[in-house]
Image (cartoon, rainbow, N blue to C red; front, side, top):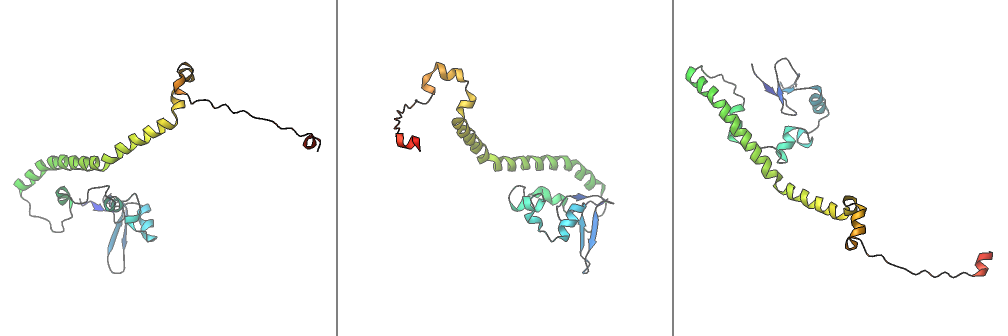
Length: 166
């Protein structure tokens, strides 16, 4: 059973699913769903559509080059059956999956390194600005150092009788 990749979003297309578009020059495009097919017909670039695999790779959100991807590539020529080779491959698949998952996690951690510190800074800034929402009013009454000093302004009123009459 051959699992194809969607031309637009690079997701897996199982046999009997999706849409196949064949151009006049005999180029075959496979799509996983109508959403991808419609975007293709609208001539949208997959590298500019945020939910596609191409966008994620171009913008550094997914791993682009890794030796574990080599096992998933399409092979047009079927290899001659060898029982020992098949047995070794089946044993190696779980190990390869573990390695790939670990590398993806490391990639994600490296991407998020600066993000965590930035979130802490933003949270501290927001806490400074809205500390009155966090502390109860009774705390401010007990400890006057927490409140801002009150400014007393004397207001002088000048009443002119001529203005009042008008």
